[in-house]
Amino acid sequence: MPGRKELPETLKRSPKKAQETWVKTHDSAVDSYGEGERAHRTAFASLKHSYEKVDDHWEAKDEKGPSDPRSKIGGQRARRGEGETFGGVDLYGNTKAELYERARKLDVPGRSSMDKKELARAIGRKQG
Image (cartoon, rainbow, N blue to C red; front, side, top):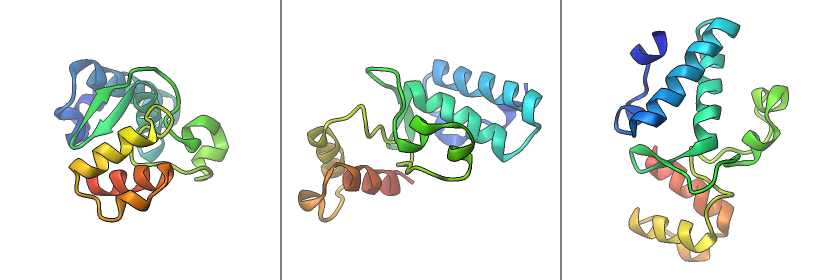
């Protein structure tokens, strides 16, 4: 399975089910679109529907669904880069208070004056 060889480091530290989701989607996308960026984007889009990036790994979300504006629109518009993404942080599945607490644990400066989107952006940047 090509996807198994290309598994990103953050997924190697994640639950087996998250790894399987990414690999299965990646390999199917390779069959449809060929190897490359589109296959990786497709695999991450699928992963982000059920998992959220937390620190250096992915964890199952409480509720499945899109995590950010880009994953909500999907298709060609998403491929063109329309809609914002937050580096795997689930904007829709977390409250502002939950994002604030994660930002506090990551020691994000200026978090007390940030709105929900700003917190998600800052967490995404900090998690790399």
